[in-house]
Image 1 (cartoon, rainbow, N blue to C red):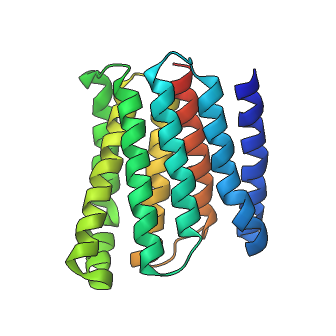
Image 2 (cartoon, rainbow, N blue to C red):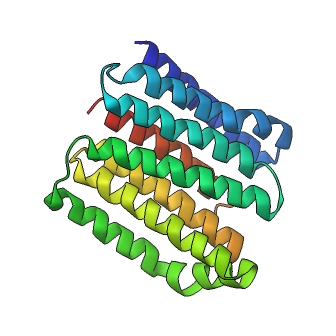
Length: 213
């Protein structure tokens, strides 16, 4: 019951954050963005089975989401790299949580197809070269590593056979794809909302799908 309350609160604050992003209300976003993830941490901690290892990994994943969100509120390359590192750890934690349900290769196939399409469309040809041009081989290598971690998260979420978690993993990956394109290539339709909406919805579905699976 309490987990559902935290989830509902996270949804309300997420909508406030989307409004702040759309209206460029930076002062509101500084609070609403990390608060949304903090409420999803509480959701992960209270919605899942207390005796399950899944709960621990979901909480870790969401906590690093808070860290990543906070880092990306800053400016500059240092803030971006800190956010990249935090989200990479979060993705890995979600992947471990997913693997706790087992791994079905039959269910993993749609995830592999999705990842291949996502990485094949503009990432390999535009985003990655843009990252190298922007920050050299170090940044390019970091982006490749991050893409591999995202891919693992998507495939393992599909391999659970839990559709809600799988959709959440895909939306989370789409958010990161848009973020990378926006930073290293150029803007896309939807602006920053195209990052934040699938980011919040994706994490919520991933957490709910794995916590209740």
